[in-house]
Image (tube, rainbow, N blue to C red; front, side, top):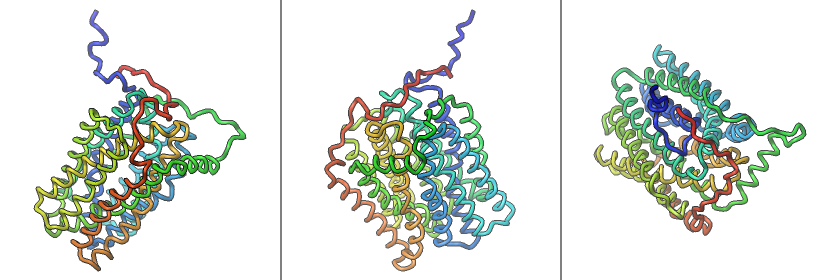
Length: 425
């Protein structure tokens, strides 16, 4: 008799079936998600819009995310997380499909793009806290740092291909088809997540606290840790500058000086390559001072804006985007390990929602201010301002003692999450 195990797909000893399915679904949706912002920006430019219109669309998506994040985090701690993610994936697939049809048929108007971008932001608000909680509960907690690094590497690998393919397709066949591919990827990711075997939501007492009480409890967890809110406040401003530089001002520079959507897709792919390189680094490197390492990664975020402002050639812009990508993964993995070891598992999604809320709350302001700033200072000086603020705040946050001293340890406070034994694929 042939050995029934000999055809099984090898998998790491620490990774359960849910982790593998969730990672695969993330790769599928990531392929489209990486190209969609490029497609949306150039769809707006082809409608005759400019920095202000790109800013309105990006800001609408981010504002909707901010408004619904806390509700999304509370639901992710009340309901089975995979159900929340499936619903969010399918909702976003619908909004992207509608946008693709409008663009492909030449019927798209700015107000329609703004509304559909806002719908996409609502989906992200429900998806993000549930996704982070799912990663934590679906692996052996002793190997959580490696799992976070592998998960981000899988996501970022898909973004390399997605950004490069998205830019090429926008140039070759137009932005509508890229948006259609994103919709298909989101629908496929939602279908994959239907196969997750995550356990049901924790049993709740009929007279237990309501959602508002749970949000207050999450807020107490969030504000009781100075390292947590200090980094979130700092990152909120940095993220606003980063999005303004790369989502609003960057496409304008690409359109004026770099050659349009194809080269802009390539430099975004270079950032994706940096994200993957950072993931491979973090699989092996386990820095003891988690937030010092993470802050060093954020210091890299200002490099793309600086090279764009300086009129650097495309290879140098790509190198800056690569370095920024490495820094992004170093920060992301270090931050997730810090949350995983310090935050109780039962409150993880709520705290993650406050983290996301603080991180993106100022992003609509950044996108709205990008066009007036470029109009008043000029495109290059606006980019220099973004680079300077990102660099300065990344240094200032190190003045908080708790940020400097928070260290990795082997018995995470949040290890109440269940340990899943690996299941054959």
